[in-house]
Amino acid sequence: MDAIIIENVSKSYGEALAVADVSLSIRVGELFGLIGPDGAGKTTLFKILVTLLLPDAGRATVVGRDVVRDYKDLRQRVGYMPGRFSLYPDLSVQENLAFFATVFGTTIRQNYHLIQEIYSQLEPFKNRRAGQLSGGMKQKLALCCALIHKPEVLFLDEPTTGVDAVSRKEFWDMLRKLNERGLTTLVSTPYMDEADRCDRIAFMQTGRVLAVDQPSVITNRFRKPLFAVRAADTYRLIQDLRQAPFTESCYSFGEFLHLTVRSGGVTDLQIGQYLLDKNHRNIEIQPIQPGIEDTFMALMNQPEPTA
Image 1 (tube, rainbow, N blue to C red):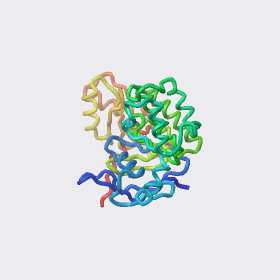
Image 2: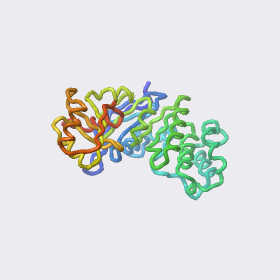
Image 3: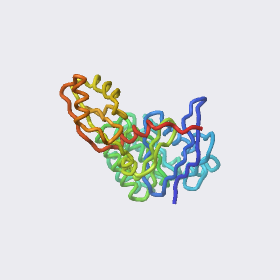
Image 4: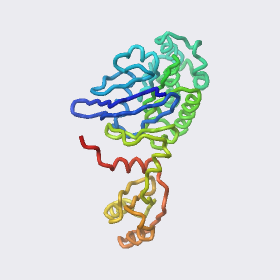
């Protein structure tokens, strides 16, 4: 059974196409990730699904409600955490939570069991103004406010952007626990390493969906040989490798470059000899297995479908 159904949805801002003929379905109880860089169309799609924007074309339903026709009913059934912190900075933690509970016709006491595990970390700061919380604590408060009315579907738009690595991990651990209780969650992120925390993902770029599946299944589609390469002069290394006859693509990944070659006939010895001929020093080359980022970069390089 599907909690969210998106059928050929498009949205433009003037001449800029933000979402281009997107079709997706998210199952009930699924933790689903929209993965892509800034400008991919994730936020626009989220705003359509939570009834804050009208699509130019196509239709979408959330828990069986049409996002245009049934917007009043739907707003009572979803929780939404926007990418930018949008709670009241001059109200305390407890005041913010009480306000959002009142808006949805409930109370903190009535639904405290929904947020208890998360709110217990905030309780020592319940009288502190929300604007004075750390990034990770703001995150937790926003999540509590999105959950306090017992939504059927939770929408989280880039919830971990701008927070430290420890807070990111804690947040995803919380999402997994919510998911284990059966809550359908749609989360967007520009961080490729967070894709593995989802049941399924959709890669988005320039408003289009490039692939949809389990993270491991998508990664297994990467079939070409991949090498991690580094040398003394990184800038010259990437220039020379991109001009090599055997190169499919070459990108920087931390200290190494990830080099995809055109066929399995190219060996690390041949790559090394090519670089020696180009006067590179301190050369390191090793075959590697592709990750989510490698797969995304390969999908990005595929030609866009013609109209």
